[in-house]
Image (cartoon, rainbow, N blue to C red; front, side, top):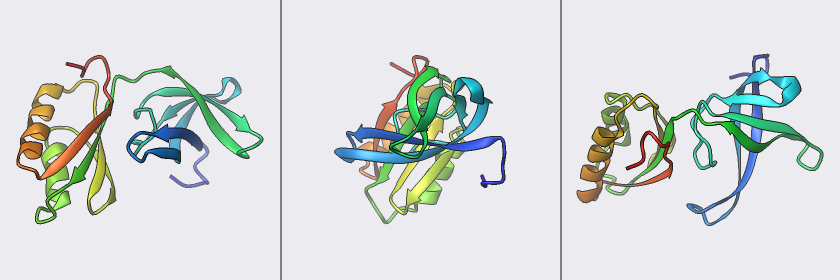
Length: 154
């Protein structure tokens, strides 16, 4: 996304992260749904923020933050977010990401040991979770499920 893209905005999320164990700020890209009503649809996979891509959120300009700021989620997309950390660095993080990409889960990489992936609402999470568990049992990765939609809950 670029600042010239008139259909996208950046929204600030301020929240306490259980993963980082601290107050955290994350900026997420969103598509404008109805700017007058403050409605935006997230267009990226959050690394830590308590939301999923495709969620429709209410955000407004915050005087203190001096930016568009998340207030609440209006409509859940049904997508889920899984955080993955590479424990065994003898494995290539991109090959692990490709394994999940082949299962229909796109991801965003933060560094050479951490990525987040989106589980689309229409995917069968049991197959994906089976692969996550298999890699975790082999101590290749660790993973967390911060945002699981009702469709993906077990």
